[in-house]
Length: 191
Image 1 (tube, rainbow, N blue to C red):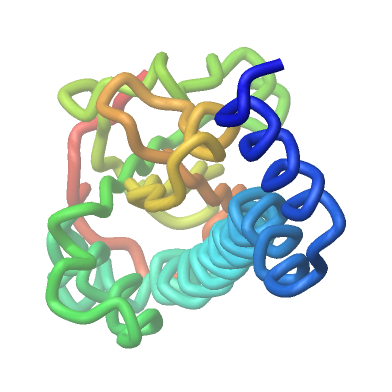
Image 2 (tube, helix red, strand yellow):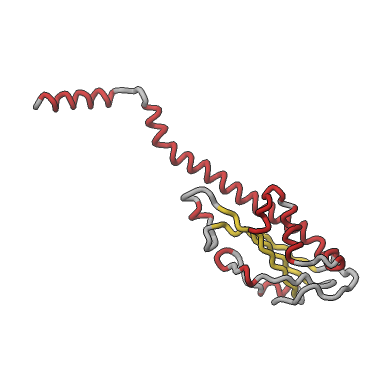
């Protein structure tokens, strides 16, 4: 065996027995998956937090519709309702209304609600949303949709549910309006 080959094998044996830097090498092997796991957990927690916040904000903003407060005050419109939802999620900042869509529909009774198609995820079309808060004792279905940007690569394929690469988070409220003082209709009836 040539001398250079013997020297190379000797260095290779010495390298395999060396223990300096072993921890750094081991950490390098697990750092990527560990960081991906940590960011994935944080991402999922943010999606759950946003879902819970949107549900609470939708319920709170729908209360004035249910009691007729918005209808009798003449402030029952889609923009005012979206602002009411976003004001309950002020931590999102001024971009909330740009990412929020509102769909409010009136039905004859609660059994009609079951025939309403699911409009979330990739099936969502913002041009087909409606604003019909109804009158006294009408059955109303309020749906809000928020586009949440997913920031963790690789995890996004599991969390993205819309065509634009975001997570469409939705909240739903269904109720019968209270028998408040009758006013003229505040929006066209949508089906």
